[in-house]
Length: 169
Image 1: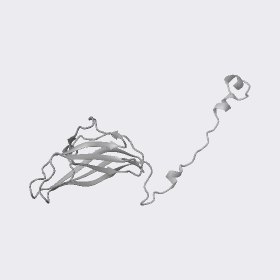
Image 2: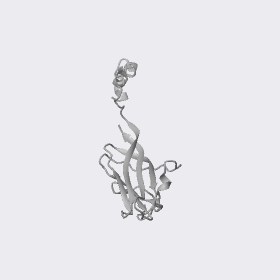
Image 3: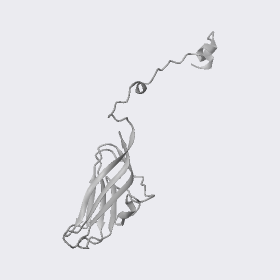
Image 4: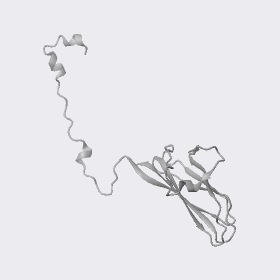
């Protein structure tokens, strides 16, 4: 309707004074929260990458892997190292060699570079990441290496990791 058509109306103001429909109370406000049922939206959750160990005669490069079941966006990587060093040979430097979501590297370093795993210790400050979001079922991998594998039986370096981020609920 244009303004020329309004001139034909007896009460032009009636056109502008139409009452808006009352919408009522949204259903989400009527429904009580049910204990144990999560609300919809984003939630801060951990994505465990698992654990592995550098041992005598083992590999010097290992991979930790997770496959989230819901959309996920990582914000903080935490790497935990535990050394069983009875023989004194579990002293190698553990490095992060890659952090990939699918085929996309999340670290701002070229392939083949590495950084100390201690940079992502649970007590580290200012190491938040802004990782790419991933859909459920996409593989998230963390590559770790050690500069010198343990050489005495019983010595080992255990590595575990978790990514804290937002997951769709």
